[in-house]
Image (cartoon, rainbow, N blue to C red; front, side):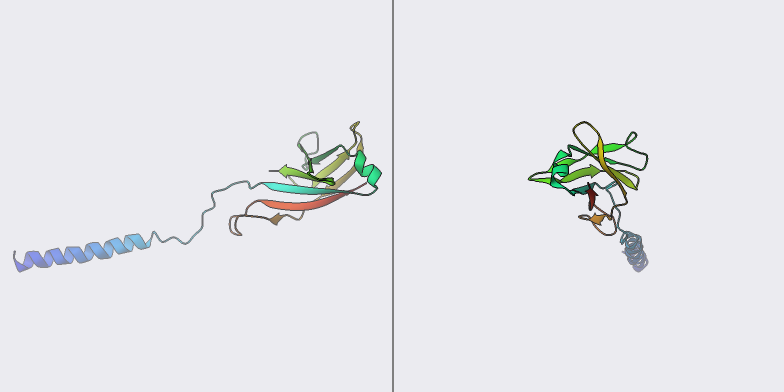
Length: 138
């Protein structure tokens, strides 16, 4: 092998190594990509006031800004606690409306609220599930 051929091989090897390093350095992206969209939200609702009135609440509806006729979720009792309810929410426009109903469907109390959501999982950059607490006073 001649020295010219050998010099060309060494030069091509160096150029290839530098080129590969340059290309690969573009792959060290430090941006974080968030894969989840629409994290779940849980609204915890306390029914406060007279115990006899609290016991008459048989249904809690959580409604979005559009109103209960358009969008609502029925809350469920927190197991072992008759004064606390929970409602899973997603894509509700605020302020929310929370209605306490008796067995006949009559509205016993209603509040409009913009909950203070606290992230309970995920990351600061990408968000995550969140929870808020509100109270309905009878």
